[in-house]
Amino acid sequence: MRRPALTVAQKIAAGYLIIALFSIVALGYALHSLQRQTIRSRQLVEVDFRAFNLLRELRQTTLAQDGLEKQLLVLRDPTLLDLADRRQAEFAATWKAIEGLQLRVADRDLAGLIKPYLAAQNRCAGLQKEEAWQRAAACTEELTIPARKALLKGLEEWSRQQQSNIDQTLQSLPEESRKAYQVTLLLILAGLACSAPVAWRVIFSIHRSVRSLVHATQRIASGSFDHQIVLKGRDEFGKLAREFTDMGRKLKELEARSLDANPLTRLPGNLAIERELKVLIAADCPFAHLYIDLDNFKAYADRYGYRAGSEVIAQVGDLIRKAVRDCGRETDLVGHIGGDDYVILTGPDHAEA
Image (cartoon, rainbow, N blue to C red; front, side, top):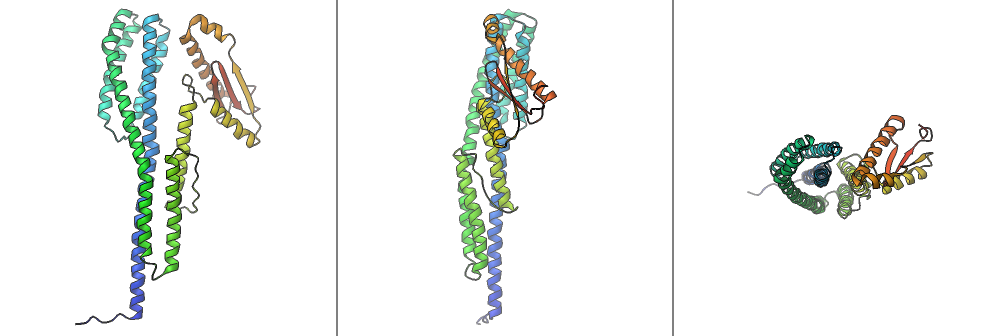
């Protein structure tokens, strides 16, 4: 038996049902892809990049402990014990921050290297505080040095693996964006025969958003963290655009902070100071520029040694930070030009205090 022919109304209804079906499928796929990319972008900024920087900080702290330990055993100067304790606390805090991240690498391997190292450090530190220098040297040779070598090797492997994860994520984001764009476009084009205006609006919106996101992903992947995505609206496209913008800003801040910060005082360096000055001048905002220099520092360092001079530099940085915190504003900048030279950018009414 022949099936009855469809009426015009039924064909129109069927056509609109097909359009609705394709539109729902297309939008559902696009939103799912965008949500997945948003999650991956947040994972990239909040976990992967942070873990990479924390691993690098942990390695730097471990190397600093090595140098300080050697100097302590040679000089046998009890005054260096406080600095060693601070380095140990800094190491423990960094490791605690790493443990708090849900990394995509096996954290048991690194934890198995951290625990022996901390145990060796604590045991040798106890001997150093007792000023049992020969026993402390033997403890360092037998326990700390092998544990530190194994830890540094593990940190290097972890950093490479974390960098590989970041590279893979950055490379996959553009491809996923292109794939989402292609599939969505094909689904929408299938309904254009029945309702071109409606289909055109959907295509134009998705095409513009996906194209901008693909371009932004490529720019960020190439290291251009200043790229801005201009997408109107508060939908998922706009949210993802804001996520990309925030990601670029955070990446730029992390990069600038890592490259520019003084390794001794952890204060912003010349680039950060210059950038803040340009912002204040461009905003025509009144400000005070305080320059701080230590008198006779070179003579002091020549007399008491590099380590004592470094400790003075670090303590002066802490004192300036405390002074600004007590007498200044939250937006004030404390910078370390280098050596015994520091800079404070504050309001004119706070400068004298």
